[in-house]
Image 1: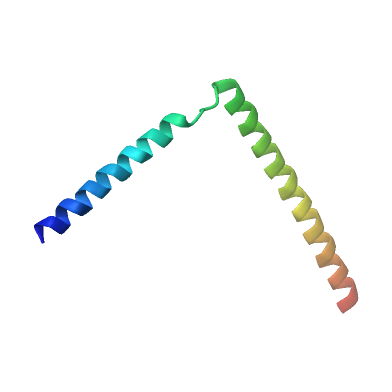
Image 2 (image 1 turned 30 degrees about the vertical axis):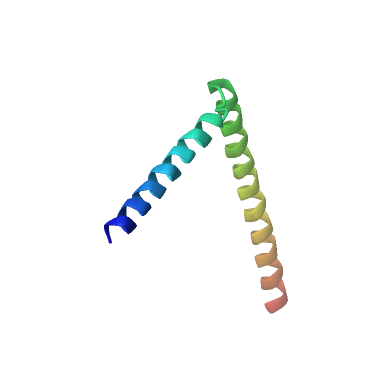
Length: 68
């Protein structure tokens, strides 16, 4: 039983070491790039939200015209 616990503890330690080394390979964006990308995501999300709302309202009006 103790051998199994040592084995899983060693595997966890190796896994965390691998995870740490992978995180060191990440190239994190600088603040300027991060701000640009954040603004782009928010703007695209807002535009898509408006488009979906317009299409939804148009489809609803079309259905209401057919039903009445």
